[in-house]
Length: 175
Image 1 (tube, rainbow, N blue to C red):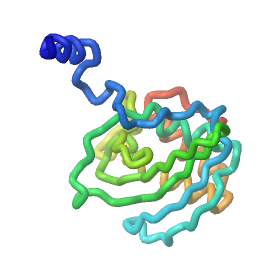
Image 2 (cartoon, helix red, strand yellow):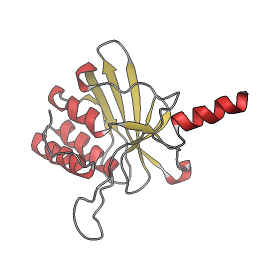
Image 3 (cartoon, helix red, strand yellow):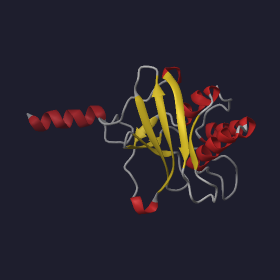
Image 4 (cartoon, helix red, strand yellow):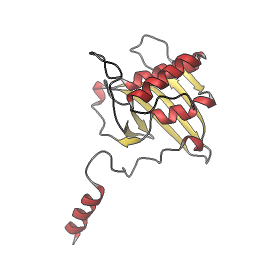
């Protein structure tokens, strides 16, 4: 009886990364987010770390969107990854999600949500022809955060548009 139950559960849920993971916190809709606090700690760019700052409210939906939909993802070996930054997503209902941004290579954004390893689900499209046709998305998120910290809204919007294109979304603005 126990085996039949497990077999039917595997059949119903599936075995891929896209199945819901028991420990993955519910990802908020942008309308549920009160604010996002961000910090950047990437050493590969040669730029200084950025202390925690508030993401401008008009960019909150875009930041939530570029990490959506989060899907559980087996973490790569820690010796091959690098922490890029951190977000604190504070929801209107009092929940707080701590998001760690991680670099591993050219791929959709890798991150953790309250310690659970995730990847941005959905398509991963080439953004331009040639050898650099795929975007290392976490570095685009880092660029977005750096531009927001510096008050460079036009450059931040360009980062959002690159991330939307990489994710196969219609290119749009911060909202």
